[in-house]
Image (cartoon, rainbow over all chains, first blue to last red; front, side, top):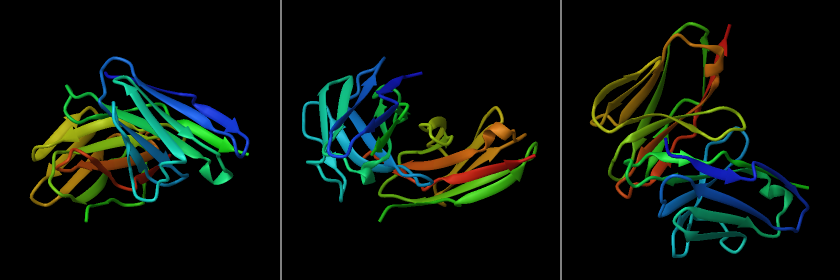
Length: 116
Length: 109
């Protein structure tokens, strides 16, 4: 099946620093990728939709200046958490759709971010 | 508005059968997914239904009724490794996934 690779899988950073998370579609071209955040025992919360070659579309309540998304190619989207704070600690997951395989969303492995 | 409802938690016994229900209200409909998510891991695909009826895949089956806005995931011969959260997600007219909050399934010996 289609593969989406996300890394790092775990990262610990100091408060005030920035962290970049990468999401790659390995065997298909993804014009659209999605970034989710998931707090413990809660469902996935869509943060933003990343569109190749254009600006990301952010969900209400998500600060676009804090969560920078870049989708520079058809196989790579990045999420940068800027000036991270402990409340940003969460599980971040990306997903992408293979346009040739109906609408199924393939997920990356997720990134566990801990801000200390 | 768009909404997905599924039970928060269910408990079942190893070897038994459990049915997890999901009701949805979306702007348009282009199918419904079920995903399994173990704690600390990303969701993994289980099934996709777009037509009415039951689709069976090994121990797991998924059912859809478009007229009722209803789906269920049926798990047979439960194993301890089936303990996980099960996420229901409907696809709206814009092909966006609308996620349910997930059902935590606890399997007891």
